[in-house]
Length: 264
Image 1: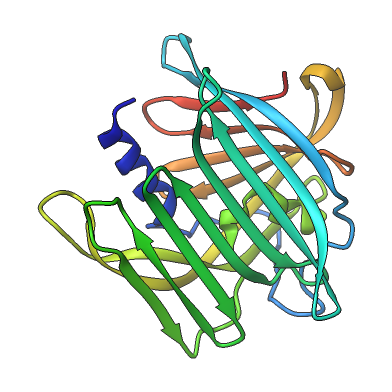
Image 2 (image 1 turned 90 degrees about the vertical axis):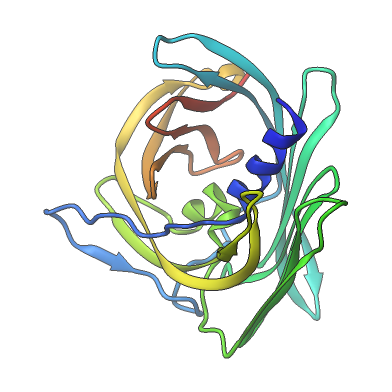
């Protein structure tokens, strides 16, 4: 993949243009709002995990995309426990393509900060009660774009992805909706990159379609909850366990292909 492709991938990962998802005709939606009675990460224990990443085309052809490492630890800030999730995408030669770090309050899953790097490309966001601030630097040759939102409503950060779904304690048949922050372009330049950014809050809806037995690499056959999230043209399908490493498979499906994270 060229550096240009990485630039566009970075922007795609950093900017969520659509957070909403259609609601099934049947079933009741459980709305989870941030706060002490919302999501909780108390059940999430420290772990270390890795997946192989593979692109699968329409004809079933498979292209290896390297290894994805994932770990969570618990640490204390001002007397309160926090979860830190660190993820890194490694190429076949072991070089790091990108790394992302998310920090949330363990008791409530309220976001504190996120940091994403891919070479010279950096996204950093700090979140405090009532404010969101940070920057997006598309590359060394481009000026960083500041991000700031005052009087921000409370919301989660779904960039932490599957770990947020684990905190919802999903059961088969559940449909859950929660608010999430996202960066989105406020203007686009001729180079196809944003000229300005804004913070938006929108709904994320997850459907816990059912429980199924899948092969999870070194774990063997496991019973996992299959949870689906629609984000614009992308569909994210997670297979979740009640114990570490919690996320045993992920597929990101688009009209063109599927990217699969699989346990080796």
